[in-house]
Length: 475
Image (cartoon, rainbow, N blue to C red; front, side, top):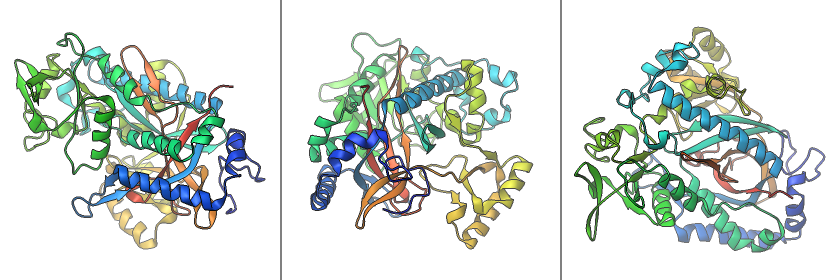
C-alpha cells in the first residue's frame, strides 16, 4: 500500500486497522485476490445491466458514462455517525429557519449578521417567494450536506445542497450491489440499512401535503427529461416510491390544481418532487422561454393547491457566497454554536480577501459562487502555471463570482487498484428528509471517491467514483 500522508480511515499510521474496520477486515482479508477481482467485474456488470449512468455536459448530447464503483466500503462507527447526524440535523433546522426569515421579516438582515446585498442582489433569491408560506412551513424537504474529514473526529461541511440534491440513487444501488456480491459480510457485520429511503421519502413528502389535499396525497416526480444528467435517478426514485414520473407536457392546470395525464384522464397532484431548477419551473412567473416547467404552477403553489419540493427559492441557502456566514446563521436561529464546522473561506468580493487569494492562488481551491459538479474551479496545488494565470484573469475580472478555500488534507479510504489497495480521497453526502414532524438523516449517504492518485476532486463529472457507506449499529 502507498505510504500514507493523510488521515486514512481504515489504516492507522502504523498500519493497524482502525476500530470501525476491524470486524470487516477480518473477513475481507481472507478473500483471495482473484475472487476480489471477479467481484469487481460482477459489480461493473451489474451497473451496466441496470443502466446506472450519468450524462456529461459539454461533450456532446447524450454522452453517458458508467459511474466508477469501488467495492471496499467506507465504514463509520456508531459514535462517528452520531456526531455527523446531530450536526447535520442542527444545520438543516437552521437552513429552514433562515429561508423562512429571509422571505418574511428578514430579522437576520435587520440584526446585521449578513450583508443585505448578499440576499437582495443574489440571483438565487426569489422575490416572488416573499410572504409565501410553504405547506407545513417546510422549504428544504430533501437536503444533501457535503462533508469532508480531516482527522479522527474532525468533520467539516464543504457545502450544502438545498436546491435539487442528487446522488441518492447511487447510495441505494451501491448498497444493493454490495448485498449481491458480498452477502456474507452483511450477515457478520452489523450495518444500518439505507434501503428504506424511498419509503421514508414518500412518507416525509406526504406529511407536507398542501391545504387543497383531501385524502391520501398523490405524489409525482417532475423531470426535465432523458437528457438531464440525473435522469436515471429521477426514474429510479419514481419506480422505488411507486409514483409517476412526469414531464411538463404531462401536466396541466385544472380547476386551480395541477393535474397529470393518466390512462383514466387527468388526476390532481398534491406533492410534486421537482427536479427542475427554479428558473425553468414556470414560464409565466420565471424564464418565459422554459419548455421544462408548467405555466401557472407557481400561482397554484402560492394559493395552497400544491406542494413543491424543494420549495422555490431554496437555492439562496446553498449559495457559496453565503456559505461562509453559515456559522452565524446556525447560531442566530438555534442559539447554539455549530456542531459541524465550516471550511475557512475567503470571499473574493472583499478587497482584502481578493488580494490574499491572488497572492496565494497556487495553494488554494477557488470555486464559482454558483458552480456545481466540479466545474469552473481551480485546485491550485494541482494546476499548471498556465491554468493559474488564466484563472487569475477571470478572478480579477469578476471577483464577486468566486470564493476560495484552503487545500484540505482530506481523509482517504483504500480502493482496489490493479496494484492492490491504495488510498484515495473521499467526501460524504448524507441525505436528510425534512417534514413538519421530523428530520430523518439516512444512516449512510453517498461516499464519493477521487479515483485518480492524488486527486482531490471526487465529482463523477471529473472522473470520481462512489463507494457503499456503512454505518455500524450500536453494540
